[in-house]
Image (cartoon, rainbow, N blue to C red; front, side):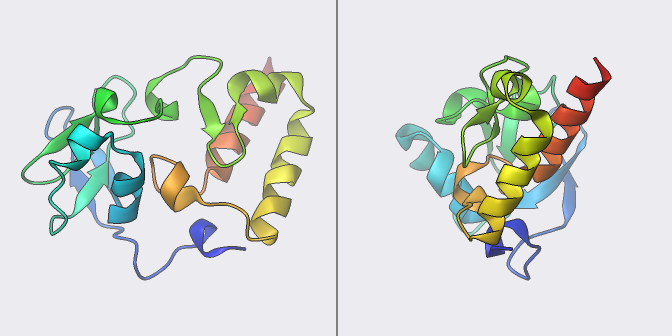
Length: 148
């Protein structure tokens, strides 16, 4: 697997509470924020701080630190965990949305992503707002679709 889909020492795995919804978030690398924040928001980034990703669906905050927050409107892409639209990416590297997972053979999507990971083609740390491999998200959506 490529480095982006493996846990590495560089990833901050500490959990902190989102200042708005008070739910636990996961640490995210600075490169993720640098890749996905819109220019005006990027100018407000404080690189020496540790940021976390809030995955709570009803919370508008995406990234937070002890001193600042970034909301959905601050990002270049929609957030899978916060937007249940059919065209929102589930897999940001290869453009698989909920709609495309419905129309494609669901199991093939998981095999396709695994193959791309094996070939070191994924870039989750710069494409996926959660800064981690999307395979868990894809598997969850596929499982939900299979239950329908």
